[in-house]
Image 1 (cartoon, rainbow, N blue to C red):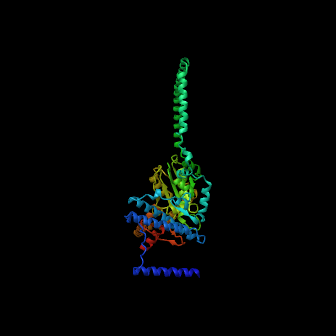
Image 2: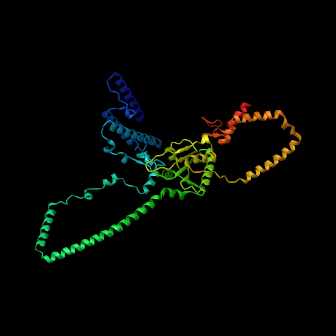
Image 3: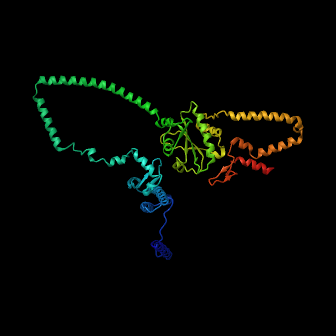
Length: 478
């Protein structure tokens, strides 16, 4: 009952507010611009920034409510992340207009209110969003690992004792040093000449010893630094990421990946190329192309593993059940996908190269040709010899030859008849114009099932077709 009264009061309030605005008795609330570049005033930009921060504060307070469902919490968390991105654009616009830089001087509320999940950059979880199923496990796993503290956090714990209290020039110390200097001067003035000569000789001996020690220190130090430089050069050539990849390669030449290992090997500096197959092999997805492409991709990896030049190119496999976050991060809405991540230096951000499965087909030879062109390595497919298929073909060939020999004796005149060659020519033209040769070259799927379980007989889009389309077109032409 209370909830209905609140709704009624809210509707009545909105009605009165709109009526007052029409009569000119109240000012209508302006709507915040969606594009920060449309504002040309520092004062207006700061006003919209404050408005955005107040909205963020309200949503962060609301996301703590335990009565919200998981779906509402996810929606709220997405809205807060979107507002945080808008906050950055407003602050950048203020700087462009000559205003203060709030990115440096303003309080960093993100560090205390939201946290990034391991392996997910740019997306933060606020309040109850950190307790969602699938997210809590990521933070628990990251909590067990050592966390590197930033320079800001380290400086926060440093006080004046670390830098000293600047009491080196204290008046008491200065007076004490002056008294010692006077005492030393008096001793030198009243000392005998022989003792002065002896002290001078001892000083000369010490200077010679110091020169000799400096010479040896210089020689030993030079050798030590050369040795350190050599050791650093040796260790610089080693790549721990590449060594870890080599250790994870199985007997089929593949590396089984998950969300964490994918982010580790596919991002940042890498002196190797990585080819990743992303599939959805679970029975609930009913992905027939994934099941067709999986053995073909394994055949490519196993064939390339025998190559001597396979030290800088690796093949990985990531299934949807093991890397749902990666599918969302790469904005992939279908499967399968073959992605190539080329080598990149530190600070670079190269885009991955996608193999067009619909256009080029699912066979291993087409994928190998694509990888040869992109990677520069000779990726060749070596299929194992199929003795069963060879025996069946041989049996059929011998049987067909025997049948033709028997038929030719009684029906050989048919091969010399004009009507026979006319019908054969028409059938050949119909088959070729219906796309049979394209199917032989590309090797597309015969049919394409949808997520609902229905079967597609006609491929969507341009420059693509299914295997059954050629049969449908040829039958229509007949």
